[in-house]
Length: 241
Image (cartoon, rainbow, N blue to C red; front, side, top):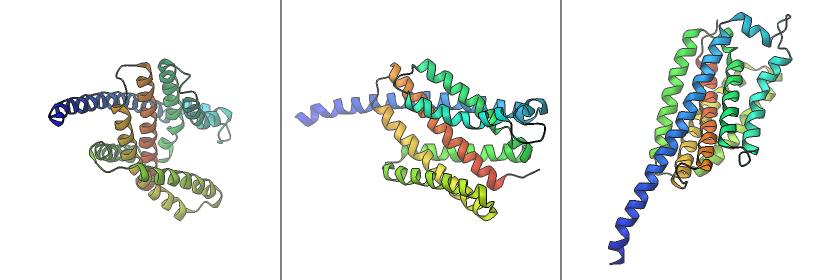
């Protein structure tokens, strides 16, 4: 008798949790898509205008102080948003996310000087397809990806260290290996992060300030997955000028 009574209630609760999770993820992807659009527009704007790209470089051709600021400021903003997540309002987090997206666009504008426009466009579409497929996998799979996520995060640390070492070694083979591993890592992280965000979305209260802040930070995670996947694929597939 109890089972017959509880079963419809459980089904209703599960349905409600699923609906909230879908709404939460919809907000996450909206924030992420808007940020990617800002980055893409700014990158193209700066990358195709010599007068704009020149403000980040000295007359000798090397990067100036402003250029270094543009390069490292996004990392600082990610750390700031993560550390002050509970203190900042959702409005402040959105503003910082927009600033981050603009600075990332300025930083990525240099790819237009290295790679052909057609290869950048084709790599972007390949990245979009791969990201979408893994996002769907992460959302629909019943397999717990928690352990995989831990391994992949260690892999991220590994490729960061390897990239720093290769800055001094200048090994083309190591660069190729790092790029291939990077593609695999961020492909997997996309599925892991979407599954994690789905679980978060199932346990939040829809429409609250805290939920909106979680959606913004979730969008930042997926944004970083997409950008890193794009850059590693570009290093593998991009046609240089």
